Image (cartoon, rainbow, N blue to C red; front, side, top):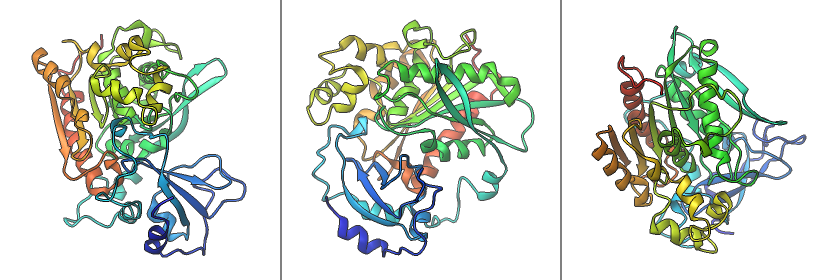
Length: 396
């Protein structure tokens, strides 16, 4: 336990309204929330008596009188990009209390926002659409589309992070809504987590989502020739792998719509890993405390399961037929998330690529409005150029 008193004092605890059922699946909504934090302040909320947390806005929770308690560094670390950091050394970083207070999201100094409320209100929203089936197991996505835009629109698959073993489609809802407000059909997807099914289940689900969109393009008003992907952390890795693994039979999987292509035409990996054969990956995956998420995901360390790591590595599959790629990462995130070797290889192949480094931002940069805005401001022009242009890459 750490920072508990700090959190309590800063948030000025109020219990007037308690914790509503909107946020936790529970018959009796609790009004006490545990804050779990990994070594880069990637935060999860645990509700006493609740089976699922739906990642509400912290400011709303504070206003409704939710009591925050028990903040500490979670183990195992849930973020692959920061798994080589020291979980116990954060004296010079944002405290958990500061992070939650900042996440109340005061207005930007310039008064701007990339997602004005009227834009979100103008979206058609469809929730819990089944996109893949594995026997009795189904996977769902949430879909967003501008009400005012008619005809076929490019689509973007949004892939949440969480170390391949945590999270859900709701974690990328804001990303999906923000992109949809700029003229795209977007979907935020669930995928099988590593605790349920190890690799390659996760990438197979991402590919199934792309195939589903193509198979149902007419129903949802999607341009089937222009589909992109974006993801953060583990989702960034999966997005990059989705972009580079076209034609790799072992990664295609089932889930339905086998007659349709899972190829994408543009990708934005955020804070993700692209070289799973690197020395960094070897060191982290073999570390007893830090490598748990890697070993669960890929069945062991890099030394134990080199074939799995090779198959899961976007850099291994990269070739001249792959789509344009724009990386986004926080300035304080591990340098590996800048994908220098990956981008250099893309340059050699003549594939459009780029990098946005968000100043002062840590690994979980989507938690702060100005960082979130910078991410959207980088992603939208890239997707517009490569998914809306008349000469976009044809589906292979």
